[in-house]
Image (tube, rainbow, N blue to C red; front, side, top):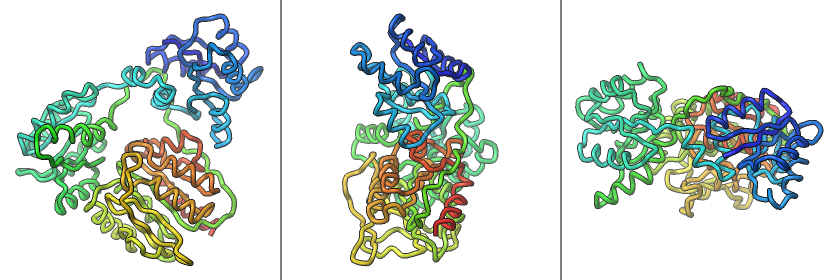
Amino acid sequence: MRALIVDDSKPVRGILARVLSDLGYECDQAADGEEATRRLAGGPRPDVVTVNLNMPVMDGFALMAWIRGKPEFARLPLVAVSSEQGTETVARALRAGAATFVPKPFTPPAIVEALAAAGLGPRAAQARAEPVRVLVVDDSATIRATVSAALAADPELRVAGSAADGVEGLARVAELRPDVVLLDVEMPVMDGLTMLRELRRVQPRLPVVMFSTLTERGAKVALDALVAGANDYVPKPKAATPAEVTARIREEVIPRLKQFRRAVPLPGAVAGAGASRPRQRGDVAVAAVVVAVSTGGPVALAEFLPAFVSRDGVPVLIVQHMPPLFTGHLAERLTKVCGLPVREAADGAEILPGDVLLAPGGRHLEVARNGPRIVAVLHDGPPENSCRPAADVLFRSAARVWGGSTMGVVLTGMGKDGLAGSEVIRAAGGTVLAQDESTSTVWGMPGHVARAGIADAVLPLGQLGVEVAMRLRRRG
């Protein structure tokens, strides 16, 4: 595999070369578009070209036009790289032939994701990541055996060990140093919640995924665990046969564990992207705030919402990826930290100032006009992004109803739910904010929005609520 790196900055070329070399690429370099054309015309054909957009002599746009004008390079993957991240710049780069766009400053994982978007992902991903070592803690020997067998069959996962209760689990964590703990909630000797609290005293950053039976009590205890510092949860599968249980584990448990896959440290890796400078988009008053959040959501919402919600403020509508039962308990928790009612949305109910509404688990939430009133609409439409509720569904409807007065916020979470909806909000003239990588449990959802260049600001969680409050005051 060969890569051609085109950038007028020698340090940036060096960083990209080290990252790509560690991913198995042989790298050539060019300082501007003209030098790149000479290398492409006379040298070995690369498998991918990274193109800085702003360069002297021949800029990245002109270079991509030259490349796309050559039949032999019609399918050559191009990755645009630039410190300019505006929507028009990104759109122009994609129209010029780029397969994807990477904003500066970038991280090695961002380059890996760009290669994946250009069709080169699997080889690069394997080169940069080690299998996730999982400790399974569950009092059921059958569950331990079934889960361990399913995980062991996946090459991206490795079973570090297992434990039958929280006391044994703590000992195994200290002994085995796993990457992730899959933790049952209800166990004898020491239950999962108690183990989590003990674990957080000595291992505050070790990812923990709760493995909860989807009952009223199971949902409540699992939510308590999320508030206490668990990173994610997954319902225990209910199925008639062992084969069905294994299939559910592959579909529902394994993706939750893979989101914590560790990147191999790369020499010369640059620091993670910091907060982007907020951009103002006019003086249109904000009529509503819509929020997308998934992995790490309960803790993020508990910090984010109190900074700006108020009884006479704009309505706030939230899609948190959770199954039924969980969202009701989450609403109760958030009510306590916000000091005003947080409720599950009710179908047909009017949306009023000061409302803070959660999409009920398992149902899509939209907003619609009903005469002079704006009401909540719940439905069981097909999942989007494998999610129901899905933030994209809510965001699109909010843009239809409130247009440029819509503010969308995308918080921590796996996947890309919220990206398409954020694009619709921006197209309608609204505002989009995203959580930064350093404070996200998983920088999937906000990362997609940030890298697409459609966020007005990318900020740490502690600053996001304050930013929303400031924008509401300025534009209210």
